[in-house]
Image 1 (tube, rainbow, N blue to C red):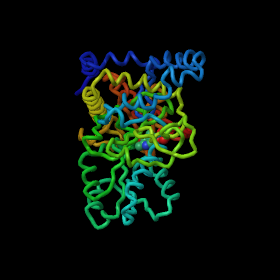
Image 2: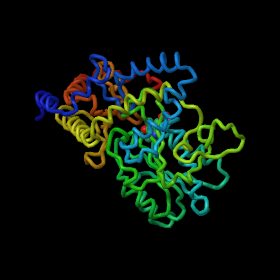
Image 3: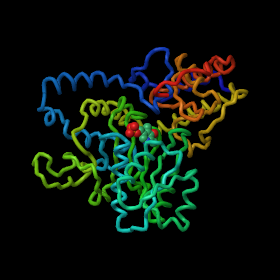
Image 4: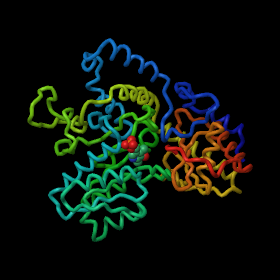
Length: 417
Ligand SMILES: *Cc1c(COP(=O)(O)O)cnc(C)c1O
């Protein structure tokens, strides 16, 4: 039996415990949704004020040069790079994950153009819907007869690649940690299988960056994208990242060729010539206010090791799973997150027939997770600011709600669940 005392003892011995004080978390809230919108670093308030008052207000247009606004997407990319196993000049922070996925998918298809028999773009049915929609959107605009192939489960991929259709696959795009189940794929093995079939591998790291250790170059992946507003605490709607390895820079050609991708944007030439490096993955003028705040989240990751974060993340999610078994076993909860550490990201999802209503009841009592169709209650564990006692208290509130059926099955759905 795990007791509350055990949880408090683990907090007392936690080398990351001091990080929590660097976040502005409201009193009375147990925040288990940092996988959807990270908490606010306290430093972001001062940074926002600086950008608004000094850089924008006083610096005006001069700040593009004097405050480093122009280089911000690239500088932030180099801060983010070590978290995903990338080199400093291979990452840019820009645009949204959806838009960046569009760019890398288009670039990957371009690289495969010399092999017209490769018409299949493969992903899984359970991928984040925006990824599927963006692929469909792009393929709809291309003249060649590309086809999107949706795997019923990712585990069908090796057989597809090794079989007759393997030679028809141009690109496989997968999400490393599934948004719904929290299941993590083996990036190294899967990328090797994709390459063995002659296809290119695109990884979506929305639920990986800042949550689990990632080694893109170690896995020899081809392209990657991901969010900064989830585990990286960049702020609501903060710009996403895009990774293009140095070995692909020269061939990287994407269709959103705004002036910020030009070799000399201020030469103002009608003739297009792409920038040499990762700049060609941008598009147009960047949202400086949002970008500037991303730095506050990233700066914290520079001071702690990803290995320590990962170890605590697994300890938190394992504790949650154990406490659910200990206190809620008689309720119809179904764990859909893998128990194996190598297959688990930094969230736990449990299904309940009234998942939406139960989550609303939790939120009303200050335990904030979220809900994903069908029936899934998601709980995200963010080792920078989640404590072991948070996990204990969250399970106690859940137990109380379930034991007393203290939820409203007719709860109205909000726009964002
Ligand atoms: C959160 C998430 C996104 C979000 O994309 P946006 O363009 O930022 O809305 C994309 N892909 C995955 C896998 C996600 O989890």
